[in-house]
Image (cartoon, rainbow, N blue to C red; front, side, top):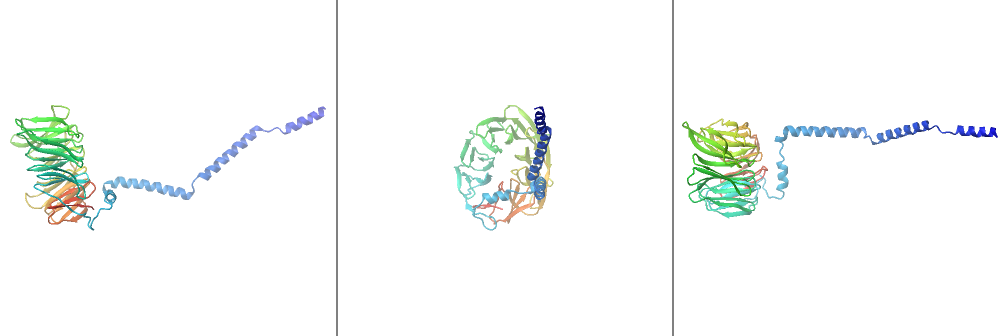
Length: 418
């Protein structure tokens, strides 16, 4: 009995499992399976090389875009889609359409359309010549200014003003009896500044917000006020006042906060006549016959660009981040320069010219110059972007943001697409 028990006990002892060894074998097998799966999921050498090449290509492309961004022009791609189906000849000209110019016609690009004002009406055309808006106006000296999506037509020295867009009239204003309008301007947010003469005052400025609600008025009894502009942040109004100090003619620029009655700041443009107030980038620019003076919205002068030759013959401040100038060496003749200046008063480029210029216009990154026989569209560095033949009846050009341009003749308008 005892002997058999020992035998059974021995057999039981020989069949006992070693748990530590089993666990070690299981862990080893699990690690081997993980390595196998990792090897199966790891890309092949060829795939790793392709991935590396793609990554390097993306890095290189980003570097090229960073360095050459200003030289890469995506507008051609945009135009290819925007004007798909538009009828053009081999030079890029579209079918022209007629207009009734009346007397003193003025034109301006208004978004993708064209605004016109004459002595008898204001009109907005689309690119095919369809009339989107038309308003009868009686003006002796019509003028036109555009903002972001609106245009203002006014009678210089008269009493009529109208603000309108593609969809219709936004404001029609007749100043009080005995008063007259000197100037009207819109900023890119469509805030309006109207400069006028009032009885008992040498000048006044009324400011309207984009809803055409009057939000500010400034009257001047001491100095003549001839122009005004609302800054792009819609917080300040800059007005040009005229006077003399110590026998020197001075344009004094006065700055008002639109939420305060008292003058906020002022600065002088001495021995020069300011012909326009505009914005270039975040700066206010006063374009005079001698220099361009740049200032912050709050009235701190940041730069002054002295013209390299003495006579200002033309200008456009509608380009993105640059001011375009036409300068001449003499009062008459065609010996001069085209110049572009950035928003901090630094010259971008200068180009010598010896041809008569009929008109200039800037928009986007482009500067259009209408010579007597052709229209040339320059980049802001004054490298030539495209050129078109112009008939002898051509008299005006209005540049568009996408690189196309309106060519205006005596009684016809056509869109030129590079």
